[in-house]
Image 1 (cartoon, rainbow, N blue to C red):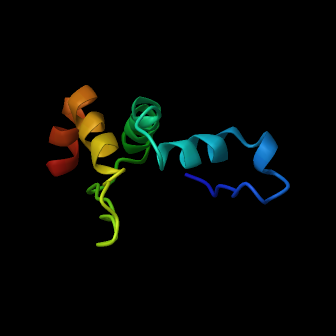
Image 2 (cartoon, rainbow, N blue to C red):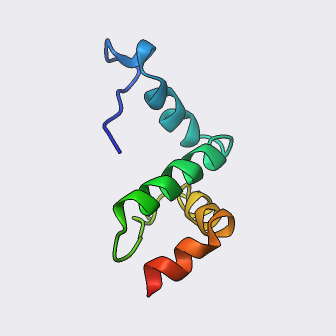
Length: 84
C-alpha cells in the first residue's frame, strides 16, 4: 500500500493512514476499512495469490488474520478468482 509514519515522525499528525495502521495494531476497529482496501487492491491488481505474514511467536494477537478473513467473507468471489 504505502509506508506509514510512527508518532515521532513530523508527518505523522497529517497522515491518516499512519493513524489507522497504528490503531489497528491495538484493536479491530479498522479491520473492515482495511478489508475493503485490500479487496479493492486484489480486484485491481489481479494477483496469482494472497498471503500474509503470521505474527511473531512472541505476539498473542494475529492482527492480520481477521482482515484477510473479512476480505474473503465480503468479497467471496475474490477467493474463487484468486485460486483459479
